[in-house]
Length: 136
Image (cartoon, rainbow, N blue to C red; front, side, top):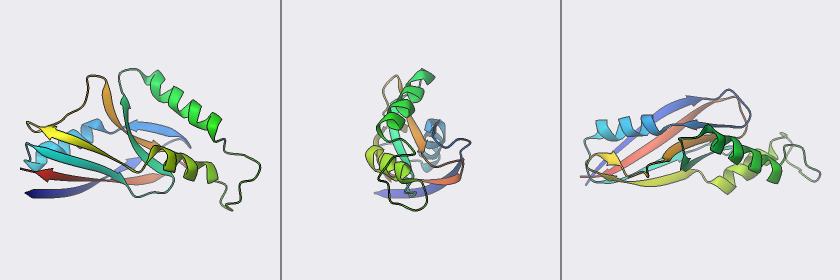
């Protein structure tokens, strides 16, 4: 079994933002030479996340961010964390810091409308995404 681990950087422009990183992940999978296996896309930041969702209609990311903001507003009575980004930590934990995808014939197995997104909840910032690819 071969394992390849690569990082790339994402610069965010807004406090809450979803950035389609599918092409970067596809490129790393292609460069790895692994044709069958899996990939883990991981974010080591406590106020950001990784998710898979529809990437054909930008309204989906808008609606997701709107829903998360309604569930966990930035300003909320009772938050104790001194940095003022308690909502960002909550959103990150809810969405999750990683996704795992299958690789078949050298490509990620994503549905027709699926894309991989980096989710920023405390931007703007410069962030790092790690992709670990395993297989043959």
